[in-house]
Image 1 (cartoon, rainbow, N blue to C red):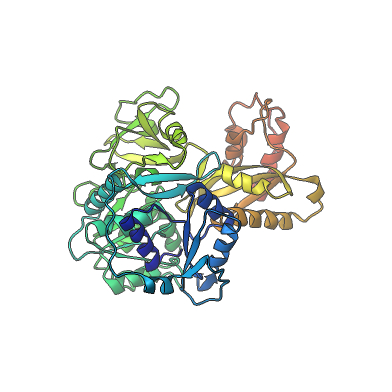
Image 2: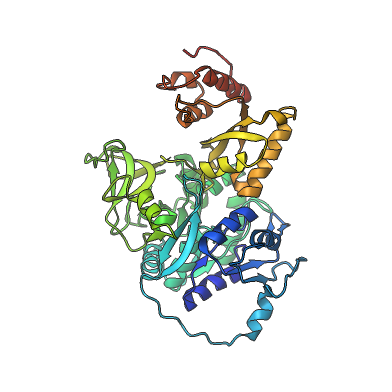
Length: 524
């Protein structure tokens, strides 16, 4: 579904009757949708005929048809007529939403649920390659989203809240739908991109609807920074009181632009940190209370007990200034209760790495004032424009094409997206006669078909082999250094376990040639 009212109707209707919903981002491929349907044992799919992206139609019904063919668990597909585009109706399975509601009663009795009953599933990428169906429960999740929304956005009656996230992600669930509606706030939906038809899109919306609290991602902020400030300044943004950032760490330069140009140096910037698994924000400034530092997620929300752990020993670092991995002591109402159908994986992923703590998977710096600065993931998950993508998932998509024998994917810093996707691929000899650009296009299309366009690698390097240990394990640590360092030979660290060190030197030369850097062969 696109971010539309009918999608919210469906979410709230499921909550009312006690059905578990699982919203899937409209940019995912048929294969990715199929995986989620099978894992969640879904019986009904709700979609639209088409969505719109930059003024062009996206045939969502076609994607659904491809995903559900031969799936016995799906009994009905309900279609909302969004654009009126032509679709293939497969009766009796397919039902028009607009026709179906005409046959329903005007009253629907509320189903009373246990406080720990599942409210929804939301799939997020994991380091193993298989998406995880994060399970959130009714009372705890709703309480936590309501209280975090009220305090972080300093809600007042009459406020207009605009969170521009897609409802297919947790930010859309918590701070477009459930959090604002639980406290009776007016919440806006935004469907589209911030620069179409031009870079005024957000600012026009804020001016037109007198938005008081605004919530977007660092990727969008960095993107809009590239355009003239006039796109912002020509609009009346005086209604704004609080502006927020979510999805990934925000660099200080982007924070300052957001504060000065958008917030006109009068709005509080709430740089928030949380995850799909936490249900709501866990690190944040509180407006009018917390002194702000550009780039810092500040302090824990009420009841959250963050700790910095030594990544090797697992010991709590008690000094105020600390660097390590971020974990949470004790629980809170919004924490996910399980991974659907695989509670052992839930325990293994979040509680086994450091017993007694919830492990976030992120590295962190705590400064002399106790403020937390998020450095990024420590596992094999890449954060692209706020979207978490498992490297294993992308690698699996690449090698599913017969041209690719082996693949290794790493994340590299990106000025706008936060991270970009850098892939190393070994090619099947039967395909080596093809032009590299043709090969690259084939593999990128394969990833788009298997996962989504957001998972397409920004860079693909073709190689005869990958750096491996003598036991055959790919050394991704070395690939990260090659992809990100201007002089990786000085920072490779211990390479004594490599089966063939010459492979690394070849890759360094290839990547540096690709990036326009001088080549040198001095690897010992």
